[in-house]
Image 1 (spheres, rainbow, N blue to C red):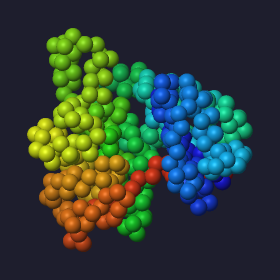
Image 2 (cartoon, helix red, strand yellow; image 1 turned 60 degrees about the vertical axis):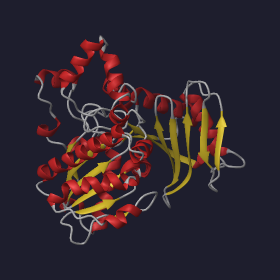
Image 3 (cartoon, rainbow, N blue to C red; image 1 turned 90 degrees about the horizontal axis):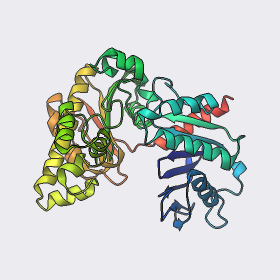
Image 4 (cartoon, helix red, strand yellow; image 1 turned 120 degrees about the horizontal axis):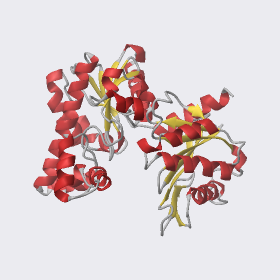
Length: 402
């Protein structure tokens, strides 16, 4: 079985074709600037060659045509006929309270994803476009599956997912904590249990997905009991361009002083805050690191704030779990920023964490492994996440059961 994994954004579309017999990636690529000038598709050929082609992509249907052409390319393609694609798996950001697991795409499922669009206005409409475009390009006979970012977090108890606002807003609008990056947290927590040689039902794990968007999750017995992101991916601790959680009065104070709308305020909090807003340098952590090394105070402050907030979140989840067996770092920054991991682990040394600092310095750019010493009371692990594989596995399982 070959599964095509799709992650459709508002102006982008990432894809991977995975052979499920070997779980080998046969092809991967990214369509950028969909609906804009200068649209292009970049992809890797089976031999590793990187190809970039400018092509008109007014909408997601045309983007899927570009993906199809790349997959079937006579020189660089991974397949000879579209019939080799057995199924398609889609990442969907917001599944609300409707979905606690991955499901086959039906008209009712699409309707519910549309209903949830107000909770993820930048993401859910793009996912629907992706599903519809897939149907047009690949046909109705190819089964499609949706895998939700929020599904893994649906085991949270009420005390963790409710906000202390009038209860009627939960009843009327579903305002609550949903959490995101669920496929990543699920993958690395299961991998951590395997590495410890333990049944996941007997573990207490804190998973730290640290990237341009970041979240931390407390997982007890394989089930989420709390997570840092909230109603939207804006909640939690500071990120690349997101502020993270704030005193709500900060928002109204700035809006009144600057005379700006709620929409403009959300743009500031989502696109202009976090590492970018504090450092004034960039949302890319590599740029902030370079500026900090050159003595830039604001870059240093941005990192100090980020490390401190991550450590505080881990500490709170240690309490929520009633102890902890393992802490996992993953995602772009988590996997490639040794200083972040070292500083965070220094903060939580009071919990019995002891880091192997020499190995930690080497652990980046694909180097994973155990970051803690044998004497550490909590095992600390660096695991490369693989959200696409989770989507492909769920898709395979659902399609094979048809």
